Length: 536
Picture 1 (cartoon, rainbow, N blue to C red):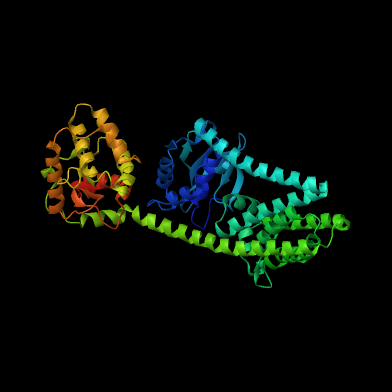
Picture 2: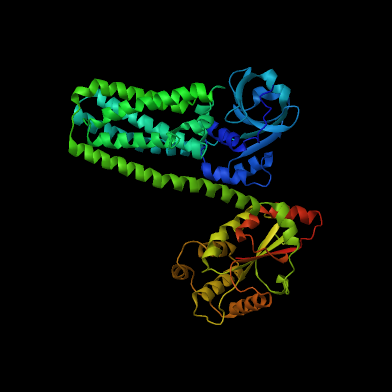
């Protein structure tokens, strides 16, 4: 059976993340998952390329001759056909004749080029290595690792100064290792951590997910082994910093041995799968028991220390059972956010909804707004905005990015909704000055002032730099804008119209970026799309 035959949905997030990490590029994993899984074309190729574009990562999609494998980059995504369906996999070159192919976290294999060529369609996705981006990733990773290392080294130095014992240091380091493994177990159990998944799936006999989610993964059918692990090592790490000679460490080391035996027995016989992370925990616990046996004569019974240790344990237990529900809620919220964004990005739902909207009573062509972009544009986005409006500032950048992305295909009309009767109002004053700069010959100055007024700058600071309108002529334009808004039942900002049709209220104004391509396509296909207005 081909390794490309996978009964489950191809985990594009894993493959895309693998492509990035193998090229030394680090992005926010949460944002990567959000952008990819919510894409309307997921799990197809376009969802990957659009996601890479979102992170400003240059990518190449090409259909190449099968004889060109030697010229391909070291890492790429390839389209394969298993005889039933097409899917995408991540490919890494191992040698001249060997390729490592990853289908998902559980299915990967080193195969020959000949085996790969039988299934490969010739289509690839490759990314350009950006040295600057790779350098930023290395620096970011180095800073995080350095901080943790410094904390660990100070802790080790403190313990050595208290005990002078190498065994004590070994015990503490093993506790930190156990804590790290416990964090991986929790992340794999709740979030499906990609790094943990790599460790858990290196063999067909290993599967952390099955073991951790088994009913046998609970002591007395009550205590989850993942909870017990992270509580135990968090407690030991903190308590050992306080008192290195407490008899409690010997007692809990003895009590941990039945847990090790229980875990090994059920992995081997009841479940039939091994969990590398669980085996790591078992190894650490066994090592700590041996250390405590050798340290027994140095241990003492100090009731004050024991009392304080019990308080630390209570604090760790309380803290964990406070944090764990928050992690579970975050996981559920992530799923809801993805579902919500998937709806908001689905052009197949948006286009019919948009077409069902009625045109506004008075066309935007009846006024003379600020016009940005090509005069021969296929779409006109009319933005009703206000320089003081907080949400208008938030979406301003999105609209300007659209203008850069589609310079010859869209035109943006800016309509200010301001209290024009009160010329002492800062909104009115800034709007008048922007209109005056727009009509001046220096367009560079206009764009600079226009962008600045939608930045985080204070409006009075902005006025100190750009001043006030020299005449009241532009107040007449604000009056016309206000009348136009009133006649079309527009009373607030931001608002958006697309070719004289209101942008549906169920969407956020910034969601327009997801539909420009579909609107342009519909326009070319003579679907009912004529003039688009956006209110900001």
